[in-house]
Amino acid sequence: MRPKEKLMKESYWRHIPFVALCAVFVATRLFFISHTPYEYDSVNYAFGLYHFSIPNTTPHAPGYIFYVFLGKLMLHVIHDPFRMLPVLNCIAGLLAMVFLFRIGGLLYSVRTGYIAAGLFVFNPLVWYCGEVAEIYSIEAALSASLGYLFLKHFCHGRIFPLYWGSLLLGIAGGFRQNVEVFLIPLWLYMVFRTGRRRREQLLCLALLIAATALWAIPTIANCGGLGEYMRLNRETLLFYFKEYSVFYGAPLARNLFMVLKVFCWTMLFMGPMLLASALIAIHLRPLPWRRYGVFFALWILPSLFFFCGVYIAKPGYLLAIIIPVIVITAAAIDAFSRSRVQAAALSIAIAVPGLVYLFSPGVGGNEIPLQLSAGQNKASAAFKRLFRYTINDVKYSDALNDAFVSSLREKTGKQRPALFIFTNFSDWNFRFANYYFPDVEAHEFIFQRNYSFISHTRFAHGRLGECQDISIPIDNRDLFIFLSDASEHGRALNSLGYRKIAVMENVGYYYFPSGSFSTIGFDGPKIFLRENPATCPGP
Image 1 (tube, rainbow, N blue to C red):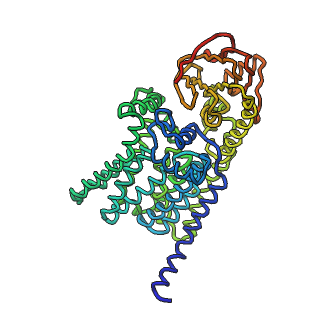
Image 2 (cartoon, rainbow, N blue to C red):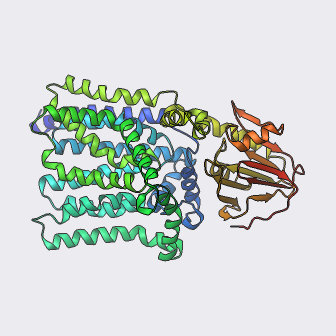
Protein backbone atom coordinates (compact mmCIF):
# COMPACT_ATOMS: atom_id res chain seq x y z
CA MET A 1 0.00 0.00 0.00
CA ARG A 2 1.41 3.39 -0.99
CA PRO A 3 2.03 5.95 1.80
CA LYS A 4 -0.72 8.30 0.53
CA GLU A 5 -3.32 5.51 0.42
CA LYS A 6 -2.28 4.33 3.88
CA LEU A 7 -2.65 7.87 5.25
CA MET A 8 -6.14 8.22 3.73
CA LYS A 9 -7.22 4.86 5.19
CA GLU A 10 -5.97 5.87 8.64
CA SER A 11 -7.83 9.18 8.30
CA TYR A 12 -11.09 7.32 7.55
CA TRP A 13 -10.70 5.08 10.58
CA ARG A 14 -9.88 8.04 12.82
CA HIS A 15 -13.25 9.67 12.06
CA ILE A 16 -15.40 6.58 12.68
CA PRO A 17 -16.04 7.52 16.36
CA PHE A 18 -17.29 10.95 15.31
CA VAL A 19 -19.55 9.43 12.63
CA ALA A 20 -20.90 7.06 15.31
CA LEU A 21 -21.66 10.07 17.56
CA CYS A 22 -23.52 11.72 14.68
CA ALA A 23 -25.53 8.53 14.15
CA VAL A 24 -26.42 8.44 17.86
CA PHE A 25 -27.48 12.09 17.67
CA VAL A 26 -29.79 11.49 14.70
CA ALA A 27 -31.26 8.26 16.10
CA THR A 28 -32.03 9.74 19.53
CA ARG A 29 -33.68 12.85 18.03
CA LEU A 30 -35.79 11.13 15.41
CA PHE A 31 -37.01 8.51 17.87
CA PHE A 32 -38.61 11.10 20.19
CA ILE A 33 -39.43 13.79 17.62
CA SER A 34 -42.60 15.84 18.12
CA HIS A 35 -45.27 15.98 15.40
CA THR A 36 -47.50 18.79 16.70
CA PRO A 37 -46.91 22.44 17.74
CA TYR A 38 -45.28 22.75 21.14
CA GLU A 39 -45.53 26.48 21.82
CA TYR A 40 -47.25 29.61 20.52
CA ASP A 41 -44.30 30.59 18.31
CA SER A 42 -44.35 27.21 16.53
CA VAL A 43 -47.68 28.10 14.90
CA ASN A 44 -46.41 31.53 13.84
CA TYR A 45 -43.53 29.84 12.00
CA ALA A 46 -45.89 27.27 10.44
CA PHE A 47 -48.26 29.97 9.15
CA GLY A 48 -45.24 31.89 7.84
CA LEU A 49 -44.24 28.94 5.69
CA TYR A 50 -47.42 29.43 3.66
CA HIS A 51 -47.78 33.22 3.88
CA PHE A 52 -44.90 35.31 5.20
CA SER A 53 -46.34 38.47 6.75
CA ILE A 54 -44.82 40.04 9.85
CA PRO A 55 -47.75 42.51 10.29
CA ASN A 56 -50.07 39.46 10.46
CA THR A 57 -47.79 37.69 12.97
CA THR A 58 -46.81 34.98 10.48
CA PRO A 59 -44.23 34.93 11.94
CA HIS A 60 -44.01 37.44 14.78
CA ALA A 61 -41.53 40.33 14.69
CA PRO A 62 -38.62 40.63 14.09
CA GLY A 63 -39.36 38.20 11.28
CA TYR A 64 -36.78 35.37 10.97
CA ILE A 65 -37.00 35.60 7.17
CA PHE A 66 -34.13 33.19 6.35
CA TYR A 67 -35.47 30.61 8.80
CA VAL A 68 -38.88 30.73 7.15
CA PHE A 69 -37.34 30.62 3.66
CA LEU A 70 -35.27 27.56 4.59
CA GLY A 71 -38.41 25.98 6.03
CA LYS A 72 -40.25 26.65 2.75
CA LEU A 73 -37.56 24.73 0.87
CA MET A 74 -37.70 21.85 3.35
CA LEU A 75 -41.49 21.78 3.10
CA HIS A 76 -41.17 20.42 -0.44
CA VAL A 77 -39.54 17.31 1.06
CA ILE A 78 -41.50 16.96 4.33
CA HIS A 79 -44.98 18.38 3.83
CA ASP A 80 -46.05 18.63 7.49
CA PRO A 81 -44.53 21.79 9.08
CA PHE A 82 -44.47 20.28 12.57
CA ARG A 83 -42.55 17.23 11.40
CA MET A 84 -40.31 19.25 9.11
CA LEU A 85 -39.13 21.87 11.62
CA PRO A 86 -37.76 19.29 14.13
CA VAL A 87 -35.97 17.55 11.24
CA LEU A 88 -34.47 20.95 10.37
CA ASN A 89 -33.38 21.19 14.01
CA CYS A 90 -31.71 17.78 13.66
CA ILE A 91 -29.71 19.00 10.65
CA ALA A 92 -28.75 22.17 12.53
CA GLY A 93 -27.63 20.04 15.49
CA LEU A 94 -25.39 17.96 13.24
CA LEU A 95 -23.79 21.13 11.88
CA ALA A 96 -23.23 22.39 15.42
CA MET A 97 -21.57 19.06 16.28
CA VAL A 98 -19.21 19.30 13.31
CA PHE A 99 -18.10 22.80 14.24
CA LEU A 100 -17.79 21.86 17.93
CA PHE A 101 -15.51 19.00 16.93
CA ARG A 102 -13.37 21.34 14.83
CA ILE A 103 -13.28 23.97 17.61
CA GLY A 104 -11.98 21.33 20.04
CA GLY A 105 -9.16 20.47 17.66
CA LEU A 106 -8.24 24.13 17.26
CA LEU A 107 -8.39 24.90 20.96
CA TYR A 108 -6.60 21.91 22.44
CA SER A 109 -6.74 18.51 20.71
CA VAL A 110 -8.88 16.13 18.66
CA ARG A 111 -9.90 14.43 21.90
CA THR A 112 -11.30 17.76 23.08
CA GLY A 113 -13.44 17.79 19.96
CA TYR A 114 -14.79 14.30 20.70
CA ILE A 115 -15.61 15.26 24.29
CA ALA A 116 -17.34 18.46 23.16
CA ALA A 117 -19.41 16.59 20.58
CA GLY A 118 -20.40 13.97 23.16
CA LEU A 119 -21.45 16.58 25.73
CA PHE A 120 -23.52 18.29 23.03
CA VAL A 121 -25.31 15.07 22.03
CA PHE A 122 -26.44 14.28 25.58
CA ASN A 123 -27.11 17.78 26.91
CA PRO A 124 -30.78 17.91 28.01
CA LEU A 125 -31.45 21.41 26.68
CA VAL A 126 -29.92 20.65 23.29
CA TRP A 127 -31.92 17.41 23.13
CA TYR A 128 -35.22 19.01 24.17
CA CYS A 129 -34.90 21.95 21.74
CA GLY A 130 -34.09 19.53 18.93
CA GLU A 131 -37.36 17.62 19.40
CA VAL A 132 -39.84 20.48 19.01
CA ALA A 133 -40.74 23.02 16.31
CA GLU A 134 -38.64 25.87 17.71
CA ILE A 135 -35.76 27.93 16.32
CA TYR A 136 -33.13 27.56 19.05
CA SER A 137 -31.18 24.68 17.47
CA ILE A 138 -30.51 26.97 14.51
CA GLU A 139 -29.08 29.48 16.98
CA ALA A 140 -26.72 26.86 18.39
CA ALA A 141 -25.52 25.94 14.88
CA LEU A 142 -24.88 29.59 14.03
CA SER A 143 -23.05 30.17 17.32
CA ALA A 144 -20.83 27.11 16.73
CA SER A 145 -20.02 27.96 13.12
CA LEU A 146 -19.23 31.61 13.88
CA GLY A 147 -17.17 30.58 16.92
CA TYR A 148 -15.16 28.20 14.73
CA LEU A 149 -14.44 30.79 12.02
CA PHE A 150 -13.46 33.49 14.51
CA LEU A 151 -11.33 31.07 16.55
CA LYS A 152 -9.55 29.85 13.41
CA HIS A 153 -8.66 33.44 12.59
CA PHE A 154 -7.62 34.05 16.20
CA CYS A 155 -5.37 30.96 16.32
CA HIS A 156 -3.74 31.13 12.89
CA GLY A 157 -4.09 34.77 11.89
CA ARG A 158 -5.59 33.87 8.50
CA ILE A 159 -7.83 36.57 7.11
CA PHE A 160 -10.21 34.43 5.04
CA PRO A 161 -11.93 32.80 8.04
CA LEU A 162 -12.64 36.33 9.28
CA TYR A 163 -14.11 37.27 5.90
CA TRP A 164 -16.36 34.21 5.97
CA GLY A 165 -17.24 34.94 9.59
CA SER A 166 -18.23 38.53 8.74
CA LEU A 167 -20.47 37.28 5.93
CA LEU A 168 -22.04 34.56 8.07
CA LEU A 169 -22.61 36.96 10.98
CA GLY A 170 -24.70 39.21 8.73
CA ILE A 171 -26.62 36.22 7.36
CA ALA A 172 -27.22 34.94 10.93
CA GLY A 173 -29.40 37.99 11.60
CA GLY A 174 -31.83 36.73 8.98
CA PHE A 175 -32.35 33.57 11.04
CA ARG A 176 -32.38 35.12 14.51
CA GLN A 177 -31.38 38.75 14.96
CA ASN A 178 -30.00 38.40 18.48
CA VAL A 179 -27.20 36.11 17.18
CA GLU A 180 -25.83 38.99 15.12
CA VAL A 181 -26.33 41.56 17.88
CA PHE A 182 -24.77 39.49 20.66
CA LEU A 183 -21.73 38.43 18.59
CA ILE A 184 -20.94 41.92 17.28
CA PRO A 185 -18.55 42.60 20.21
CA LEU A 186 -16.57 39.44 19.37
CA TRP A 187 -16.53 40.41 15.69
CA LEU A 188 -15.27 43.90 16.55
CA TYR A 189 -12.51 42.38 18.67
CA MET A 190 -11.48 40.13 15.78
CA VAL A 191 -11.58 42.86 13.14
CA PHE A 192 -9.99 45.74 15.00
CA ARG A 193 -7.25 43.92 16.85
CA THR A 194 -3.77 45.27 16.30
CA GLY A 195 -2.07 43.97 13.18
CA ARG A 196 -5.07 44.12 10.84
CA ARG A 197 -4.74 46.27 7.74
CA ARG A 198 -7.28 49.01 7.12
CA ARG A 199 -8.28 47.44 3.78
CA GLU A 200 -9.02 44.11 5.50
CA GLN A 201 -11.07 45.85 8.18
CA LEU A 202 -13.13 47.75 5.62
CA LEU A 203 -13.76 44.59 3.61
CA CYS A 204 -14.99 42.79 6.77
CA LEU A 205 -17.30 45.71 7.50
CA ALA A 206 -18.58 45.75 3.91
CA LEU A 207 -19.29 41.99 4.00
CA LEU A 208 -21.20 42.34 7.28
CA ILE A 209 -23.30 45.25 5.98
CA ALA A 210 -24.03 43.52 2.65
CA ALA A 211 -25.06 40.27 4.35
CA THR A 212 -27.25 42.14 6.83
CA ALA A 213 -28.93 43.99 3.97
CA LEU A 214 -29.88 40.64 2.41
CA TRP A 215 -32.43 40.06 5.18
CA ALA A 216 -33.04 43.59 6.48
CA ILE A 217 -34.29 45.07 3.19
CA PRO A 218 -36.94 42.40 2.38
CA THR A 219 -37.97 42.23 6.04
CA ILE A 220 -38.54 45.99 6.24
CA ALA A 221 -40.31 45.94 2.87
CA ASN A 222 -42.64 43.20 4.12
CA CYS A 223 -43.66 45.46 7.00
CA GLY A 224 -44.30 48.48 4.77
CA GLY A 225 -41.29 50.56 5.79
CA LEU A 226 -38.73 51.08 8.53
CA GLY A 227 -41.12 52.99 10.80
CA GLU A 228 -43.71 50.22 10.70
CA TYR A 229 -41.04 47.57 11.26
CA MET A 230 -39.78 49.40 14.34
CA ARG A 231 -43.36 49.78 15.61
CA LEU A 232 -44.03 46.05 15.28
CA ASN A 233 -40.82 45.27 17.14
CA ARG A 234 -41.76 47.66 19.93
CA GLU A 235 -45.23 46.11 20.22
CA THR A 236 -43.73 42.61 20.36
CA LEU A 237 -40.89 43.26 22.78
CA LEU A 238 -41.49 46.37 24.90
CA PHE A 239 -44.32 44.86 26.94
CA TYR A 240 -41.96 42.15 28.23
CA PHE A 241 -39.01 44.51 28.67
CA LYS A 242 -41.12 46.88 30.76
CA GLU A 243 -42.42 43.94 32.80
CA TYR A 244 -39.01 42.53 33.78
CA SER A 245 -36.13 44.97 33.14
CA VAL A 246 -35.14 47.79 35.48
CA PHE A 247 -33.66 49.52 32.41
CA TYR A 248 -37.20 49.82 31.05
CA GLY A 249 -38.86 50.86 34.31
CA ALA A 250 -39.70 47.49 35.87
CA PRO A 251 -39.43 47.06 39.66
CA LEU A 252 -36.10 45.71 40.88
CA ALA A 253 -37.86 42.65 42.32
CA ARG A 254 -39.11 41.65 38.85
CA ASN A 255 -35.63 41.98 37.39
CA LEU A 256 -34.16 39.92 40.23
CA PHE A 257 -36.80 37.26 39.56
CA MET A 258 -35.59 37.10 35.96
CA VAL A 259 -31.96 36.82 37.14
CA LEU A 260 -33.04 33.94 39.38
CA LYS A 261 -34.72 32.30 36.39
CA VAL A 262 -31.50 32.60 34.35
CA PHE A 263 -29.52 31.14 37.25
CA CYS A 264 -31.89 28.18 37.71
CA TRP A 265 -31.98 27.33 34.01
CA THR A 266 -28.20 27.70 33.73
CA MET A 267 -27.61 25.38 36.66
CA LEU A 268 -30.20 22.92 35.40
CA PHE A 269 -28.80 22.59 31.89
CA MET A 270 -25.14 23.58 32.33
CA GLY A 271 -24.53 23.16 36.06
CA PRO A 272 -22.55 19.87 35.88
CA MET A 273 -20.33 21.31 33.13
CA LEU A 274 -19.71 24.55 35.03
CA LEU A 275 -18.99 22.67 38.26
CA ALA A 276 -16.55 20.29 36.56
CA SER A 277 -14.77 23.18 34.82
CA ALA A 278 -14.45 25.11 38.09
CA LEU A 279 -13.09 22.12 40.05
CA ILE A 280 -10.59 21.28 37.32
CA ALA A 281 -9.52 24.94 37.08
CA ILE A 282 -8.65 24.90 40.80
CA HIS A 283 -6.23 21.98 40.37
CA LEU A 284 -4.98 22.61 36.84
CA ARG A 285 -2.21 25.00 35.86
CA PRO A 286 -1.89 26.38 33.23
CA LEU A 287 -5.52 26.50 32.12
CA PRO A 288 -5.99 25.22 28.56
CA TRP A 289 -8.18 28.23 27.64
CA ARG A 290 -6.08 30.91 29.36
CA ARG A 291 -4.94 32.70 26.19
CA TYR A 292 -8.52 32.67 24.88
CA GLY A 293 -10.04 34.39 27.92
CA VAL A 294 -11.12 37.56 26.12
CA PHE A 295 -12.41 35.54 23.16
CA PHE A 296 -14.71 33.38 25.31
CA ALA A 297 -15.80 36.34 27.45
CA LEU A 298 -16.97 38.22 24.36
CA TRP A 299 -18.68 35.06 23.11
CA ILE A 300 -20.67 34.53 26.32
CA LEU A 301 -21.13 37.77 28.27
CA PRO A 302 -23.17 39.98 25.86
CA SER A 303 -25.92 37.33 25.73
CA LEU A 304 -25.75 36.69 29.47
CA PHE A 305 -25.96 40.40 30.33
CA PHE A 306 -29.03 40.76 28.11
CA PHE A 307 -30.74 37.73 29.66
CA CYS A 308 -30.10 39.03 33.19
CA GLY A 309 -30.68 42.72 32.56
CA VAL A 310 -33.37 42.88 29.88
CA TYR A 311 -35.31 39.69 29.15
CA ILE A 312 -35.31 35.93 28.77
CA ALA A 313 -38.50 34.02 27.95
CA LYS A 314 -37.44 30.38 27.58
CA PRO A 315 -34.40 28.25 28.40
CA GLY A 316 -33.87 27.75 24.66
CA TYR A 317 -32.32 31.23 24.65
CA LEU A 318 -29.37 29.71 26.51
CA LEU A 319 -28.31 27.79 23.41
CA ALA A 320 -26.64 31.07 22.45
CA ILE A 321 -24.04 30.46 25.16
CA ILE A 322 -24.08 26.68 25.64
CA ILE A 323 -21.60 26.12 22.77
CA PRO A 324 -18.69 28.03 24.40
CA VAL A 325 -19.51 26.46 27.80
CA ILE A 326 -19.29 22.98 26.24
CA VAL A 327 -15.97 23.86 24.57
CA ILE A 328 -14.46 25.13 27.84
CA THR A 329 -15.64 22.02 29.71
CA ALA A 330 -14.30 19.67 27.03
CA ALA A 331 -10.87 21.37 27.08
CA ALA A 332 -10.79 21.14 30.90
CA ILE A 333 -11.66 17.43 30.88
CA ASP A 334 -9.07 16.70 28.19
CA ALA A 335 -6.31 18.60 29.99
CA PHE A 336 -7.13 16.96 33.32
CA SER A 337 -7.54 13.37 32.08
CA ARG A 338 -4.53 11.08 31.84
CA SER A 339 -6.23 8.57 29.57
CA ARG A 340 -9.18 8.17 27.23
CA VAL A 341 -10.97 6.06 29.82
CA GLN A 342 -10.73 8.81 32.42
CA ALA A 343 -11.93 11.43 29.92
CA ALA A 344 -14.88 9.23 28.95
CA ALA A 345 -15.76 8.58 32.61
CA LEU A 346 -15.76 12.30 33.44
CA SER A 347 -17.87 13.08 30.38
CA ILE A 348 -20.42 10.41 31.30
CA ALA A 349 -20.56 11.66 34.91
CA ILE A 350 -21.36 15.15 33.60
CA ALA A 351 -24.00 13.89 31.14
CA VAL A 352 -25.90 11.54 33.50
CA PRO A 353 -27.68 14.20 35.67
CA GLY A 354 -29.00 15.88 32.52
CA LEU A 355 -30.30 12.60 31.13
CA VAL A 356 -32.01 11.82 34.44
CA TYR A 357 -33.76 15.19 34.20
CA LEU A 358 -34.62 14.76 30.52
CA PHE A 359 -36.37 11.43 31.11
CA SER A 360 -38.01 12.41 34.40
CA PRO A 361 -41.87 12.44 34.57
CA GLY A 362 -41.92 16.18 33.88
CA VAL A 363 -44.90 18.45 34.49
CA GLY A 364 -47.35 17.05 31.94
CA GLY A 365 -50.89 18.28 32.53
CA ASN A 366 -50.04 20.15 35.73
CA GLU A 367 -48.63 23.28 34.07
CA ILE A 368 -51.66 25.55 34.64
CA PRO A 369 -52.34 24.34 38.23
CA LEU A 370 -48.68 24.97 39.07
CA GLN A 371 -48.78 28.36 37.37
CA LEU A 372 -51.78 29.40 39.47
CA SER A 373 -50.44 28.09 42.79
CA ALA A 374 -50.35 30.66 45.57
CA GLY A 375 -49.37 31.07 49.18
CA GLN A 376 -47.07 28.44 50.68
CA ASN A 377 -47.22 26.34 47.51
CA LYS A 378 -45.83 29.11 45.30
CA ALA A 379 -42.12 28.31 45.77
CA SER A 380 -42.79 24.59 45.49
CA ALA A 381 -44.79 25.13 42.28
CA ALA A 382 -42.05 27.32 40.79
CA PHE A 383 -39.50 24.56 41.47
CA LYS A 384 -41.74 21.90 39.90
CA ARG A 385 -42.23 24.04 36.80
CA LEU A 386 -38.49 23.79 36.12
CA PHE A 387 -39.24 20.19 35.14
CA ARG A 388 -41.38 21.04 32.12
CA TYR A 389 -38.63 20.65 29.50
CA THR A 390 -38.53 16.87 29.29
CA ILE A 391 -39.24 14.14 26.75
CA ASN A 392 -42.39 13.19 28.67
CA ASP A 393 -43.68 16.75 28.37
CA VAL A 394 -43.10 16.66 24.61
CA LYS A 395 -45.01 13.35 24.42
CA TYR A 396 -47.81 14.75 26.58
CA SER A 397 -48.07 17.82 24.36
CA ASP A 398 -48.44 15.66 21.24
CA ALA A 399 -51.07 13.46 22.91
CA LEU A 400 -52.98 16.52 24.15
CA ASN A 401 -52.98 18.17 20.73
CA ASP A 402 -54.10 14.98 19.02
CA ALA A 403 -56.91 14.48 21.55
CA PHE A 404 -58.24 18.04 21.25
CA VAL A 405 -58.07 18.06 17.45
CA SER A 406 -59.83 14.70 17.16
CA SER A 407 -62.64 15.68 19.54
CA LEU A 408 -63.15 19.17 18.09
CA ARG A 409 -63.22 17.96 14.50
CA GLU A 410 -66.05 15.67 15.45
CA LYS A 411 -67.96 18.50 17.14
CA THR A 412 -67.28 21.19 14.50
CA GLY A 413 -68.15 18.89 11.59
CA LYS A 414 -71.85 19.69 11.85
CA GLN A 415 -71.77 22.46 9.22
CA ARG A 416 -72.66 25.06 11.86
CA PRO A 417 -70.46 28.08 12.62
CA ALA A 418 -68.44 27.85 15.82
CA LEU A 419 -66.81 30.22 18.28
CA PHE A 420 -63.73 29.37 20.39
CA ILE A 421 -63.02 31.18 23.68
CA PHE A 422 -59.62 30.92 25.40
CA THR A 423 -57.78 32.57 28.26
CA ASN A 424 -54.12 32.27 29.24
CA PHE A 425 -55.38 29.74 31.83
CA SER A 426 -56.84 27.33 29.26
CA ASP A 427 -56.11 23.61 28.99
CA TRP A 428 -55.26 24.06 25.30
CA ASN A 429 -53.47 26.75 23.29
CA PHE A 430 -55.31 29.50 21.42
CA ARG A 431 -52.74 29.58 18.61
CA PHE A 432 -52.90 25.80 18.12
CA ALA A 433 -56.64 26.12 17.54
CA ASN A 434 -55.95 28.83 14.94
CA TYR A 435 -53.76 26.41 13.00
CA TYR A 436 -55.96 23.33 13.13
CA PHE A 437 -59.25 25.25 12.76
CA PRO A 438 -58.42 28.30 10.62
CA ASP A 439 -62.08 28.85 9.64
CA VAL A 440 -63.29 29.16 13.25
CA GLU A 441 -63.33 32.59 14.91
CA ALA A 442 -61.35 32.42 18.16
CA HIS A 443 -60.77 34.86 21.00
CA GLU A 444 -58.13 34.86 23.72
CA PHE A 445 -58.38 36.91 26.92
CA ILE A 446 -55.15 37.52 28.83
CA PHE A 447 -55.28 38.11 32.58
CA GLN A 448 -52.76 38.67 35.32
CA ARG A 449 -52.59 36.16 38.15
CA ASN A 450 -55.06 38.30 40.13
CA TYR A 451 -57.41 38.23 37.06
CA SER A 452 -57.05 41.87 36.17
CA PHE A 453 -57.60 42.21 32.43
CA ILE A 454 -54.57 42.74 30.13
CA SER A 455 -55.60 42.13 26.53
CA HIS A 456 -58.08 40.52 24.14
CA THR A 457 -56.95 39.01 20.81
CA ARG A 458 -59.27 37.91 18.01
CA PHE A 459 -58.46 35.45 15.22
CA ALA A 460 -60.74 35.54 12.18
CA HIS A 461 -60.25 35.11 8.42
CA GLY A 462 -56.62 34.11 8.95
CA ARG A 463 -55.70 37.32 10.81
CA LEU A 464 -54.97 38.30 14.40
CA GLY A 465 -56.35 41.56 15.77
CA GLU A 466 -56.56 43.34 19.11
CA CYS A 467 -59.98 44.03 20.69
CA GLN A 468 -60.91 46.28 23.60
CA ASP A 469 -64.17 44.66 24.72
CA ILE A 470 -64.39 42.00 27.41
CA SER A 471 -67.61 40.53 25.99
CA ILE A 472 -68.42 38.88 22.66
CA PRO A 473 -71.71 38.27 20.83
CA ILE A 474 -72.18 34.56 20.15
CA ASP A 475 -74.53 35.11 17.16
CA ASN A 476 -76.13 31.66 16.98
CA ARG A 477 -72.83 29.83 16.85
CA ASP A 478 -71.76 26.68 18.67
CA LEU A 479 -69.75 27.88 21.66
CA PHE A 480 -66.55 26.14 22.80
CA ILE A 481 -64.92 27.44 26.01
CA PHE A 482 -61.44 26.27 26.96
CA LEU A 483 -60.73 26.75 30.67
CA SER A 484 -58.61 24.95 33.24
CA ASP A 485 -60.39 23.67 36.34
CA ALA A 486 -57.58 25.32 38.33
CA SER A 487 -58.67 28.79 37.17
CA GLU A 488 -61.36 30.90 38.81
CA HIS A 489 -63.26 30.99 35.52
CA GLY A 490 -63.27 27.19 35.30
CA ARG A 491 -64.42 26.85 38.91
CA ALA A 492 -67.18 29.39 38.22
CA LEU A 493 -68.58 27.31 35.35
CA ASN A 494 -68.32 24.12 37.42
CA SER A 495 -70.21 25.78 40.27
CA LEU A 496 -73.07 26.54 37.86
CA GLY A 497 -73.34 22.84 37.05
CA TYR A 498 -71.66 22.88 33.63
CA ARG A 499 -69.30 19.99 32.91
CA LYS A 500 -66.46 19.61 30.47
CA ILE A 501 -66.20 17.26 27.54
CA ALA A 502 -63.03 15.46 28.59
CA VAL A 503 -60.38 14.77 25.93
CA MET A 504 -57.81 13.46 28.42
CA GLU A 505 -57.71 13.11 32.17
CA ASN A 506 -58.62 16.45 33.84
CA VAL A 507 -58.53 18.40 30.56
CA GLY A 508 -61.21 19.26 28.04
CA TYR A 509 -63.61 22.01 26.97
CA TYR A 510 -67.13 23.26 27.59
CA TYR A 511 -69.56 22.94 24.69
CA PHE A 512 -72.82 24.84 24.24
CA PRO A 513 -74.93 24.35 21.08
CA SER A 514 -76.00 27.43 19.14
CA GLY A 515 -78.86 29.30 20.76
CA SER A 516 -77.81 28.47 24.34
CA PHE A 517 -76.50 31.99 25.01
CA SER A 518 -76.16 35.25 23.13
CA THR A 519 -73.16 36.81 24.90
CA ILE A 520 -70.04 35.66 26.73
CA GLY A 521 -67.72 37.91 28.70
CA PHE A 522 -65.38 38.24 31.66
CA ASP A 523 -65.30 40.49 34.69
CA GLY A 524 -62.12 39.81 36.63
CA PRO A 525 -62.38 36.26 38.02
CA LYS A 526 -66.03 36.01 36.92
CA ILE A 527 -67.35 34.69 33.62
CA PHE A 528 -70.82 35.54 32.39
CA LEU A 529 -73.01 33.85 29.80
CA ARG A 530 -76.15 35.92 29.22
CA GLU A 531 -78.23 38.13 26.98
CA ASN A 532 -76.03 41.20 26.72
CA PRO A 533 -75.36 42.30 23.13
CA ALA A 534 -71.85 43.63 22.55
CA THR A 535 -69.55 44.19 19.65
CA CYS A 536 -65.94 43.47 19.04
CA PRO A 537 -64.14 45.45 16.32
CA GLY A 538 -62.39 43.44 13.65
CA PRO A 539 -58.64 43.32 13.25
